[in-house]
Image 1 (tube, rainbow, N blue to C red):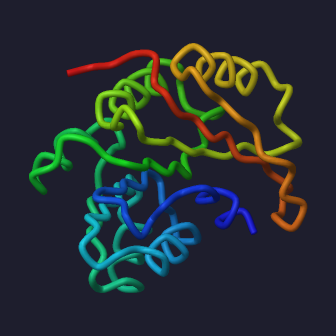
Image 2 (cartoon, one colour):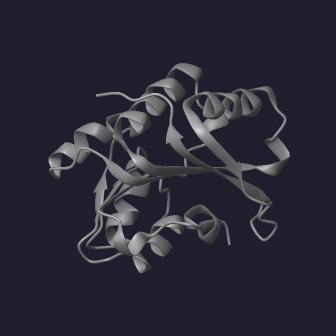
Length: 172
């Protein structure tokens, strides 16, 4: 249910490039792959080496890099791409140090096409914690449009999705 909410509104069939950061064990990855055109470049960046290897075994044709989301521009370049149509994040934003959040967000903003969309999720129980509120304010500064989905109660723990578009800050 959360995976469907993460890609709701995406036109995956006509997407040129999609990046998933923090795919973990592949819950979102699986649904994204099912809806892609074969010509779409789909790149994943997973920091944990065990999860990265598990993704490679589970999806033999998936492009998996065992590296930080901060390096999105580098990996897009390896595939002859400058921008992604969609960036999907499974990262635990509220638990990341602020400087790391900022470096990753710079990478996202520099890699997302002007008409692209960025999605991430947060757990309902943590919504009002200081780090989570700071992250939400950061999204609102970085994107002209930030929408919150309804609560996905079927996810344990319940979560909601941030759908962000129209980046305010552009990087080369």
